[in-house]
Image 1: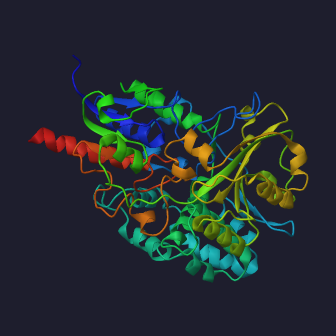
Image 2 (image 1 turned 180 degrees about the vertical axis):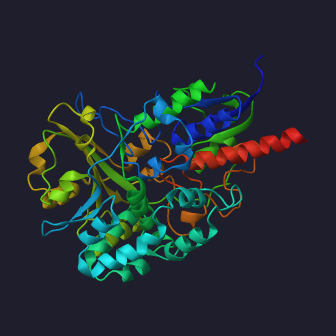
Image 3 (image 1 turned 90 degrees about the vertical axis):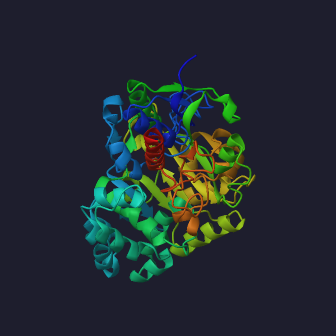
Length: 474
């Protein structure tokens, strides 16, 4: 009989794979079990529409990935990961044909807001420039696992970032800056008035200035494939097509890490109502397009940007987020769109393009947002519909079927609002541990939350390693 494994990881998304790598690097015997036939979780690439068009069914652009302390400590480029940078990280067009931009340059970004707000934006961001590595590590780790390297900088960021975004908005006099920053907050699908939403907007903006908002060459799958390649070289084993329904399905191990929703963890590990109070948030309705040319944006800046936010005013964006969180599908959705083939010709046949867009809808919503999304796109890119060769739509039921962590279509694996934005999955100093001494949570349901950055897995692996080391000392 084979000896007991040190750790078993359930789920081969970026967090599960990162946790497995961190433990394997420390010399532990690790195996990963994934229900789907391929690894990836929220970082996959598939031909969803037509042959030769390679789409990311979930995330496509990775500002927190290139800046992730966990990924930066791994030789992922040796396993094929290449970051590609669009000319502009993000553009935010308006009805008058102009656009505000989020550029690598703070000055260029500030200038796009207009003279009344340029100075306010520069004053807001300049204190944090050049500090990404320290801030990201301090912010995305837990106080109990790593003492802050720059406690003063972290406190300064917290002073500005902990209040609601509606407070930060008051620094700006015109709506160009307010709308672009509101769109950044919307990436975590939280109403603009919630605690720490100012910090969310600032984190995404700082990421652009420090590292850009890149796309991985070949699609998001290349992040997952690089992590898997590295894990296998470290001696880790990955099993795909293996659905885990209960702990007994798994081989004996000293620790079990779940890159799953808290709901699934409780069901599989027999933890009953341990996460009954955990809340799932608004969902998205996503469309992947195969296009016969680039999106015909009216604003020239949008034609050069990897990401385009479509929501003409901060009021529109706030209303759409509040409606989706409150149970109503917005008639005028706020859209986040991505244009991978602008920088990666491998994603579509020559002269053709892949493009995706999503709007926010209530959790579990079963309607069709296609027409509302395309009306918004036509508003800022007249003639867009004429470029469509094929589309693949996915509302909350389809997203949940594709990725079990997206409960009710919530791509954040739990509402990122209120205290649950900061204290995930519950108010605890040990968010990765459960009441079962050998079972841990390592998904984005635990701090620091959603995004392809692997830090939830990284932090959980540190907690497991410490627990195992303590056990060995006894």
